[in-house]
Every structure is written in C-alpha cells, then in structure tokens.
Length: 492
Image: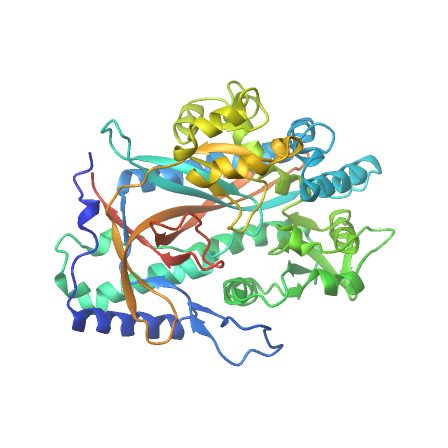
C-alpha cells in the first residue's frame, strides 16, 4: 500500500483560509486566461464576458513513479496509434462497415465508407503524412488484493484532445497559490519540487509546427475546424497565439457550415484553399460526434478536406483508430504484436483493464453477470455516452442484437477511496465545495507519420488532470462533470 494517505487529502482549512484561497484562485484564473465563455442559449458573435474555468483549489496527489510511467508510455502509444492508422487491413476489419463496427454504427460507418471511397479513387495518394495530437487518460487503481497502486488506462484520444493550454494554466495556478500562500502550511509535506512544470501549450504547437514545416509552402496557414458557439474557445485561442507569436504561423478558424462555402481543392495541385488561402494543416476541434454532421453535406465537407493535399490532424483513419473497439481488440492475445515488439508490450498490457466485445460468444451474458464492476462504452467521444454498473442490465434489455458490435464492456478502475478536494465552479456565490473526488491524469503527445521512410516522429509533451465528484461516472469538463486540476507528486 502507498505510504501516502489518500484518505487524508485535502488538508483542513478554516473558513478564512478557504475564502482567501478561493479569491486568489479565481482572480488568478481570470487574469491568466484560465477561462470559459459563459453558458447561454446562444453565444454572441462578439463575446462580451467570460468566467473562470471550473477548477480545484488543491492539486491532486499522484505517485511520482506512476506519473513518470505515464509519461514514458506516451511515446509508445504515439507510435502504436500511428501504426494502427496506417494499417488499412486492420482498420477495415475492426471499424469498417462490412464486418466491423461501421455496419451497425451509422456515424462510424459514414466515416469509414467515405474513407474507402477516397482510397478507391486515389484521393488519399496526394498527402501520405498524418498528424496526431493525442491524449492518453489514466486512473489510479487500488487492487483489492492490497498490491501497490497501479496505473490503468481509461482511453486513448486521437481527435480534439482538449484542455492542453488550460491544464498548463491550472498547474501554474497551483504553483502560484503555493508560492503566495504556502497553502498556509496545512500540509508540511508540500514542497515546490512536488509541483511539476507543465508546458503543454508549446508542446502541442510543436506538433502543429512540425506538420506545417513538412508541408513547406510559404504563406500557407493552419485551419482550425471548430464547433459553433464553442465555450472552450480560449483553450484553442492560446494555441493560435503561440503559433503566431512564437512561429509566425497564421490560423484560420472555420465551422463545417462555413467550410461548405469557403473550402475548395485545386484540381491540379490538390491544395486545400479557404477563400483562396492555402492550408498546410487541418486541425479538427470538431467532427468527433454525430451532431457535428447533421446533414450529408457536412460529411461531404469532411471528405473534401480529407482528399486535399493538406496534412490532417487527425485523418479519418487516425480518428477511427481511436475507437473504443480498437482499444478492446488490442487487448486480445497476439494483436499488440502486430504493431509493437519488446519490453513495452508488457507495460502496455499491465496498463489495461479486462475488456471484451458484447458481440463475442457469451459477451452479453458476461456483462449481465459482472455488471456491478463494469462500464459499457460505444464509439463516441466527448463524455456522457457510457453506461455504468446497475444501469447495464436494463440497457442490455433494450439493446438490439444487431447493435452489439458497436459496444465494448470494460472492467471499472477502482481509484483510492476517501480522497477529497475543494472544487470551485463559476456559480455565483457558491465558493469552494469540499467533496470526495476521483482524479484522472491525461498525458499529451504528438506524432507525424506516414512518409516514405515509414518513420514516426513523435514526442510526449505535457499533461492534465481532471477531477470529479466520486458519484459522477462521466468525466468531461466541457460537459460539466469535472474541474481542471493538476498534480502534486507524492512518494509511495
């Protein structure tokens, strides 16, 4: 067992200290860009106000050895998913609309079918390079057998891996609170070296710059494909600012609706043009959910971007590689060896919980029997899509047999019990609320791959922590379940 007592966290504060820390935190957040647009029925075209992002007053304790392991594993995951995205046969089998998930999941099927058309017509030959900005998410796992805490992967994100820039600002917030108040010395074990520096903004931009540089057309720009009314716009704007101020690279922001009229592909060069401006790299902060494609025209716009010379982040292939069914298939015996060799295979497998497909033999029966320890996951991103524990039997009663291939069952990770936190949301007058919490660590990385030499250029570039009340199964910050947090390294 860990020598650090998770159940004793956070240290006690009196009312005066709690109020002072909350004022420090919220004013720091507002003055340093740790902000959101407020929740309104319709976002105005010209924003006139902002609120601080939901945040934690204290950083969350995390074993130093497991934090180092998560960062080490990221380079392996970067390479793994780059290789999956270039393995057409594998993706066709697992995610395709002939025998894979796409045959029962309309969203996945539409993406796969469009990707296949582009392959068949030679529309992807023009640009072999692909860029991934990734995030691998983890929870601490407390074994029922009394073994030391372990690190278990929740999921791997290949599209719109958000909160990189706001996570950097949250880590800076906690270092600032420690430097300015010492957290009132309520925890003697808190030292400056336990607050790891987070430079995710520069790291993610480094990946975008690598793609832009590889494209190598002077005057070209990077396209951010965004959702209309995006509240998390500042997380994106900080990337734009870094690109412009540090690298003199300009960004064009467009929604799918805007791109329907502004985007075109030069018939000779295959260059992607947005109102006449050539695009080097397409960075998707939209396109990961069916609601981003309300009409066939929206899918057509996505396929137009895909067939262009611009480097996609991600390509459709890489987006499909991030599917939950791929995560489950990788856990099957012998599959991982298709992509990797060496000692890292053991570390990755130790990193995974038990998983299986609902459409395999006895898959549904196993899910019913073990439902109290399971989560069911579909091929969706963005939070709010999973089915947990006691809700599983009733859900299975209404799930058509034909839709089983779209779902996987995964054993639930069991974080340390009794860990608390002070959570601060922007509700007027609410202040900080103490609650028992669960914290999820995300590690960012990027990979540029697909060239003629088959090499994967990649790097681990930073991290985030999202903390939620223990009774909340979902974990999205944008969906209102979690707050932004950072790491306090502890020894076990």
